[in-house]
Every structure is written in structure tokens, then in C-alpha cells.
Image (cartoon, rainbow, N blue to C red; front, side):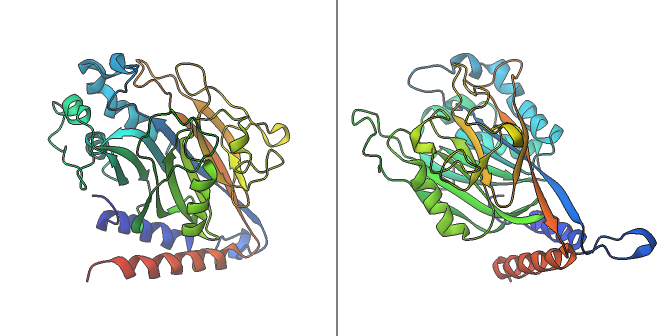
Length: 331
């Protein structure tokens, strides 16, 4: 099911009830002035699910590898207890295959293009090929704690004056959804941009949607870390923005770098998070055996903290979630 589901809503409510309870110290006294640290596990993966014009994914889409694709990707998500996963260059059929493996996760989808290769490549694996808007290739998100309210989708426009004017035009977009992520209400997002769209266009749209709510943004930015157009994203002294990146290194040695995420040796896949809410706590680029794409999954962890009277913070978060959840629940 795409969007808010009854099972997803139940998970959000259960999480909220657990979080609404104050922490208890020795002798049963409520702890009101300590610091609570929690983990948020994330993953992003460019799937190359419909191959591409350069035919770089043909080997990764053989029948043998397609049969193990969903079990392997779902195993990555489960073994790392991923809270938010983002996917780019995805076929709609792959959403259905992952949903079978991860029935306790909620998926949201944004179809950006009509791909003849997607149903042809995946049609022998599933009958779930008919995307809601007829666009069978796009981007997607998976949330462990369900989704609150409708997804947020927006098509991107060509806005980069320095982009290659001869570059091929592809439909690009950004997709977000609201969820309880770790111990905080947050907005999870995914995007896939080319040289013709700027990262600032993406983050500007997300800011309009999220406001002061913490954001986790994964995807394929098609730019190396040192690229000037990523400077407005990086914070923590690495740029002029307000995001930290999951693979930027330890807190005392932050850098605009990270392990390459493509078969060709480039780091162009990222997971950014609002630096005022999260701190990066380690990342890994995973070599799957066999390879499942011409990109590799990037997985990692952010940490968040509550300070002072976090019992009250939990109650406020829970109340906000309940109010919004029931506002969108069919009566």
C-alpha cells in the first residue's frame, strides 16, 4: 500500500505510546535533566532497475540476479534495522517485490517516466507492473514506522545555468513523506538530479514542505563531494548549508569525501540530514555479492539527542503525530 496504511498507522501509534513515557531513574524518579541519544539507520541505493542507454546494468539484471535481488536488498534493510531507505532509478515492479519481503515497512512511490524496459525486465517476476500514474520508472522511499499523511511530490525543472546544454533531458523529481524516524517526527526524502537541476532547487522545495521539521534526504546527486553546487548543502564548516552527510567522517575529522558509490569509482550517492537534529555516526558502502546495480548501496547511521525534559518532548511529538494521523484517516 502506498501512503498511509492501517498497519503503518498502528506502528506509528505504538511507537508514539512508547515514546510518550518519561524515562525513569533509580528509585523510580523521572529523569528530566539527562541527555538521551538515539540512532537513526538509513540507506540509499541507485538500482538501475530498467538498465540505461549505456547498457551498464545488463549483467546485473540477468534472471539469476533478479531472482535474488529483492531478498538481498530486504536483507540489507532488515540486518541494519533501517528507519528510512531511499531508492533511485527504480522500476515500479521492484516496489512490489520489496513490499512482499518487507510487509511491515510502508513504501511511497513517485513515477517519473514511462519505461518500456521496466515491465519487460521484471514482468517474469511479478504481475504488479501497473504503476498508479502509468509511469513505471521513478523514485521511492521505505519507512519502518509508517507514513503520516499523503506523500509530497514535485517535478523538478531545468534551473542550472552551468549545466551541459547538450545533456539529455530526463524527468527528475523529489519525493518526501512524514514519519516517526527514530524518536522524532521527521520528513524523509529522495531525489535524483542531473547536471541540469541544482541541489538547491531540491532543498528549497523540501524546506517549503518541512519547515522546522528535521529532514533526511537520500539519493543520487550526480556530483562528487567537492562540487561547488553541493556547498549550499554541506554544513558543519564544510559549506554554507545546514546538512550533515552520513559518510562525511568522524565528528573531529569531517570532510567532503566518502567511499565511492559507483562501479566506476565515483561518490555521487548521498544521505544528508539536518545538522541541528542529527550527527553522522558512520557509514558503509556495501559490495553486494553478486553486484545488483552499477551503483552500490550506501548505508549508515545518524544520532539524535533529547536534552532536559524529554518526557514532555515525547508527549508533544506523540500528540502531533496522533492529530495529523487521524486527520488523514478515512472515516
